[in-house]
Length: 78
Image (tube, rainbow, N blue to C red; front, side, top):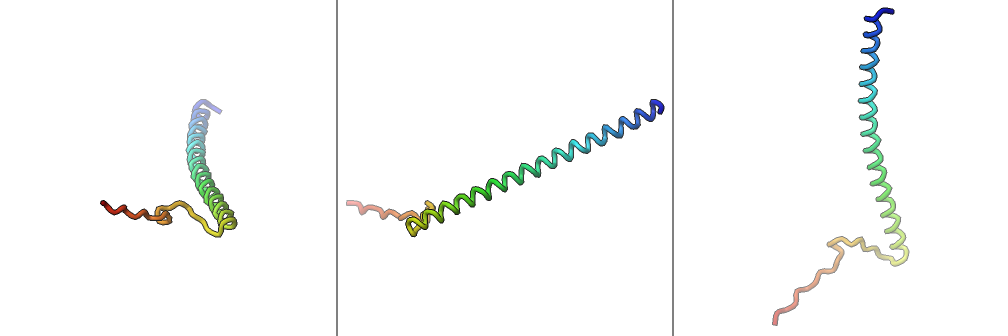
């Protein structure tokens, strides 16, 4: 093996290393996105379980939306 072959091989390895590093970055981005979605879904499930539990205790569930809050009537001016 001569110096030219070694340099060529070294260059090929460097290119392969760069490709693998880029793949790792992309894979990490996919993993982060999947973790975020999983956390969101788990949060939704916990919320649903809480609503079911509260409904079982009271027969009614108020999730606190503006539409479910009673409207106040304006006081008549004197």
